[in-house]
Image (cartoon, rainbow, N blue to C red; front, side, top):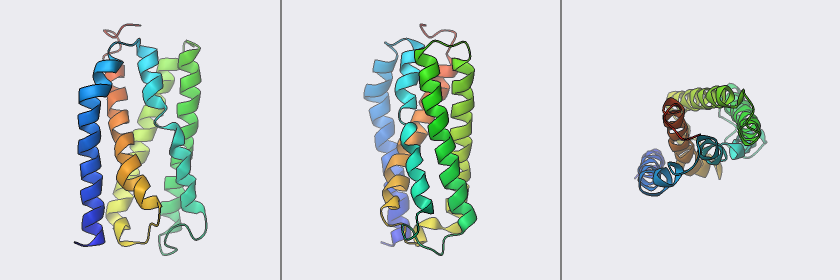
Length: 163
């Protein structure tokens, strides 16, 4: 099996596994929590996205990967990590702008993720040497996807969710 095929297989399997865990265990637990607490827990998944800055460290990934792709992914992730952390503090403090900030954070992070997927597909990123960053794409990114979707569901059900 080629490395590209292994990459996509691992990414898809991670998405399936995280979806099962979310449906069976995480979602039932979140529905018992107040909305702000449930959102806070899911936002913590996004705080470590600062790890994306690793893409800019010389020698960490294939130097043939375009700098524009690497910078976009790294700084997009860094901004998402910062927004998530600010949103967590806003939720915990019950600030009036907390929910709008969660919307902004989740939309930004999801669009950034989709932009990253576009770049991965266009450049055939799995064909490059990703070193340990391979795990970010095949393990952490699927977790982030599932978290984004769960946050959107909670935000859309916000009126019926217990405060």
